[in-house]
Image (tube, rainbow, N blue to C red; front, side, top):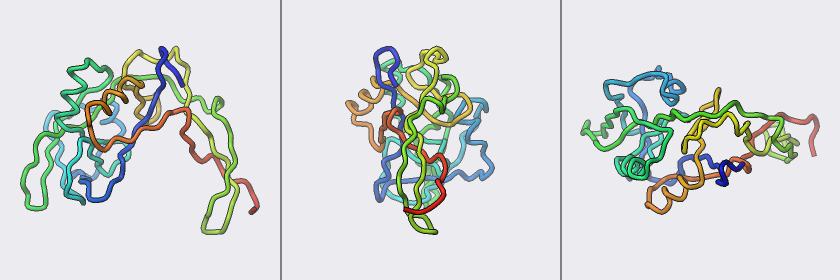
Length: 200
């Protein structure tokens, strides 16, 4: 999908071995509303290291919707006037109860409209399941009405926790050497629709 001449991407963590992943001490977080900026976090949310020893600029929290970002990410986005995001205070403690500073929760305040599944291409693939090989339908591509986009560089569709960003943000993150980001064009992303009865 293209907005103002730029491709739109989503990102995930790169899932390298040995990289720090954290977990919130508070187990009943409303990660969706925190991500969307609907809950104001005044006091730092506390996280402990779940596994790994190497810190990167993007830190997974155990919630698919919630990431921590480093001070370097904040500085890069702010200095380049990237819009559609803010942070919340976060504290990380290691296994020796030592405070690790310089990380913040990532909040997305930019918006676009709902995902329109009718625009996605339907493709059929064979996958392994506990019951053997099964043909499944996948939807390819996330699409939305461009007129619903608020113009932010980083944004999230209404009703989902997806984080979308313009190509210029992807290039900026890569050029700045920010680590642990893995990007995918939203037009190429595939997700399972439903199974087709029968086996191949």
